[in-house]
Amino acid sequence: MRANEYYRSRFGCKVYKLALDGGMTCPNRDGTKGTRGCIFCSGAGSGEFAEPRCGSVTAQIEAAKRRVAAKVGSGKYLAYFQSFTNTYAPVARLEQLFTEAIFHPDVVGLSVATRPDCLPDEVLNLLARLDRVKPVFVELGLQTIHPETAAWIRRGYPLSDYDRAVSRLRALGLHTVVHVILGLPGETEQMMVQTAAYVGRSGAGGIKLQLLHVLENTDLAALWRAGQVPLLSLEDYARLLGRCLAVLPPDMVIHRLTGDGAKKDLLAPLWSADKKRVLNYVNRYLSACAAAERERTENVF
Image (tube, rainbow, N blue to C red; front, side, top):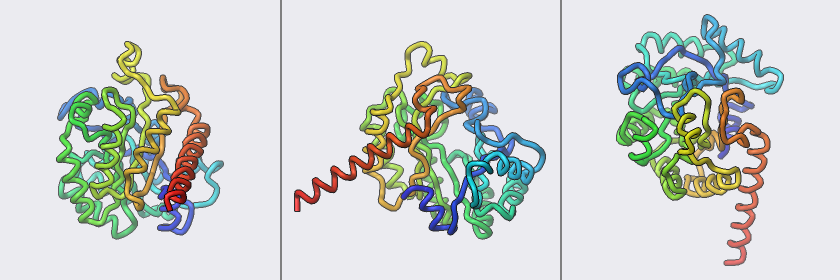
């Protein structure tokens, strides 16, 4: 199920995400586990499209609403704390931020991007309490299940942390969305499909499938310039998406089929900047695959 369908069925209207900046950092940046972040992570902590901090959370929400008003029309919003690790702060600070967001009259739910190793009991209890007010979605940056790749991207936690986090979030009834990057160097297509299948079996409710792209001012950019980072073509990416989607449970919510950075910072692949073209190509490819599968099934019977 695509995210738009899921949100409409759950909330009864079109729902848009407002990306917010909670002013967090990350254990991969503050010296706890590292200082340079994940190899692909920008200086904005993957929050290039987050509304700049401008006083209160309410002020951010209102500014974000104005910015998207021309293209969204009517609907409601998810308050999406996107930049860096959004449970990596004292629980009193998190409660202040999240409570202000979730009680905004135009906000129907809260989405929190974080890491599996940054969900202590007191934070989980806070998220569970807020979920009784309005739905809470927790987004986990997994990227890959393969330990060699995880070490290369400097993820900073073992797969067991992910397993534990998903199990605990599911026990609390919280919808978990897992981020996966396709095209990480050194991984075969089969390895990437294995990651998608693992996420599908893990108990997560949704997945974001993300193309590896290279942004300026990241360590990945230096490796790409040195010729050490091969990137996928649009055609190869669409084929890989088809394989990954085929191994996911039918009821898993697909929250993203691609992704891109801010155009001013995007170095490669440049085709990813044309999101409309990318999504049109992907949708045509997936529709053709579905039609071929129906024809094959009909011929069998």
